[in-house]
Image (cartoon, rainbow, N blue to C red; front, side, top):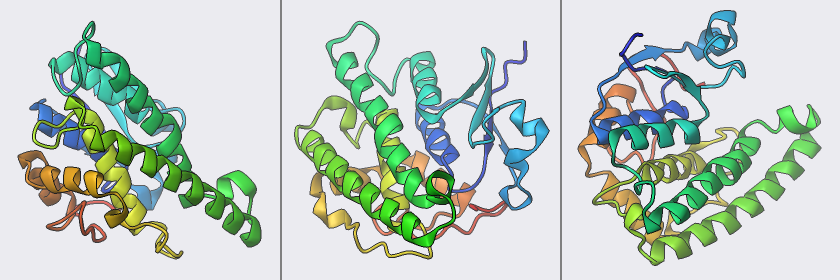
Length: 235
């Protein structure tokens, strides 16, 4: 079986979360560009990796994994760090929050990016859905801010877990997308403990490497700008 780990990615997509996690964990890997401009994620070849046509997909010695939360958990468990170990007291809460972020926060955010996939092409319905989802997201952020204030060991920017990078990327995208709609509903200053986490992450070597690889700019989390990658495109 091929032992190489290959991340199928597009710049500033959910694959960024996985790239950051692998860099932080020191996992050797190769990246394979999925050309979104050519809709490569919808091609029959890519759908052999991820039948849903979504990015990312990770080829591993154990087979292909998709779904960001599943990938992160596999990486951490195989690396032996990046998440509380099985059998430890912190593991239960870590899993609960990882899947809250994956199943609830990320899903609600994605709905605001692609409302047409949920309510069709009527602008008024899209706007109403976005407003509803943003209200939900604000509640989620308030809950995460309370969590960050309680300083669990697995939400420490000086020793980041894979969940730290997941949250950081979602906060980045809240500030940037969708480009054609009002984003004033989101302010990082409303969540100072989460903001402190992002400041700490921006000092990590993993983030600096990803900045260069995907053209993320000098402050990709605390004051994000649209990516200018050396290859591919975010949309």
